[in-house]
Amino acid sequence: MPKNILSRARNRALTKHHKIAVAGVAALGTAAVALSAVPGNADTVTTGSPATTAQVAKVATQDATLSNVKGSVTDRAAVQSVKLDAIATQQKAADQAAAKQRADAAAKKAAADAAAKKAAQERAAEQSANRSVQRPQMETVAAKTYANNLDGWIRQSLDIMHARGIPGSYNGLYRNIMRESSGNPRAINNWDINAINGVPSKGLLQVIQPTFNAYHVPGTSWNIYDPVANITAACNYAAHRYGSMDNVNSAY
Image (cartoon, rainbow, N blue to C red; front, side):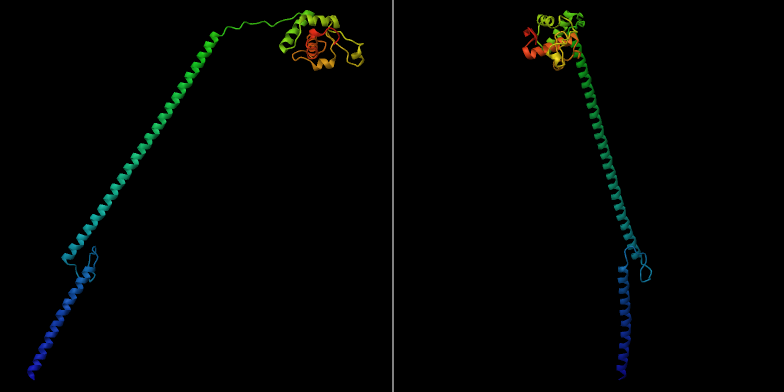
C-alpha cells in the first residue's frame, strides 16, 4: 500500500509540471499569433510586451517598402505632368503656326486683290485715253437761228416736223398759209361756221382751238397765235387726215 501511495504522488507531481509546460507553450503561441496580426507599419505589439529585434526590423522593412511605393507613384505623376505640359506646349505652338499661316494667306490675298484692282484701273484709264485719242474732236455747232418772219417760221416748223416724222414741204406750207391768212399770224375768222359755233379759226393756217389742242406738237408753244406752234399743229392734223399738208389745196 505505501508504495502505491508514493507512485500516485509522483504521478500527480509530474502531471502538474506537464500542465505548467503546456500553459507556457500556449502562451507563446498566443503571443506569436498576436504579433502576426499586428499591421506592417505598427510600432508596438498590442499585447503590451516590448517588441523584439526581429519585429522592429520587419516594421522598418515594411515602412521602407511603403516609402518606395509612394515615391514611385509620385515620380510617375510628375512624369505624366511633364508629358501633359509638353503636349499643351506643342498644341499651342501648332495653333500659333496655323494662325500665322491664315494671316499670311489673308495678307497675300489682300495684296493680290489690290494689285488686280490697280491693274484694272490702269487698263481702264489707258483704254479711256486711247478712246479719247481715237475719237475725233466734236466740232461745236452753233444753235440754228431762224428769222422772225414767214420764211423763218416755215423753216423752223419744217425742222420740228422732220424731227417728229411729220411730212410736209416748204412749198406746201407756204401755199396753204398764203391762202388761209396771207401770212398774218394774228388772223382770225369771225364769220364761218366755226365762228358761229364759238370756235373761230385762228393763226397762219386757220386752226380752231380743239384741233390745235389735239394735235399740238411737244416742244412748241401752247399759244395758238404762235406762228411755229400754229404751223406744226396744223401740219400734224393734215398728216393724220390727208397724208400731208402738201395734199391740201382748199379749206380743210
